[in-house]
Length: 106
Image (cartoon, rainbow, N blue to C red; front, side):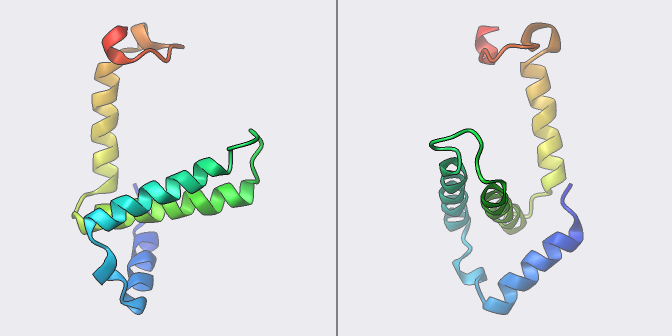
């Protein structure tokens, strides 16, 4: 799912700066959460957030997600497709269409 060229550039940037030593799964998970909070902050007081700021924060979240998946030797495309299959089973179209109800209450 992620372009291998993008992943290669992320790996190169990290290697050039010798940051891999800091990229434990725990630290990467923390970083995802921190960056996700910064993304949410873009929308804190208004719906129409600054798109360039949203783009930057979203890129940070995605970069850390890629790094975590890479660190754990997980295929991003595979885990997303597996999760979609699981979600489809939990939320059948005939019960979930147009609803935000949790699967155990459908």
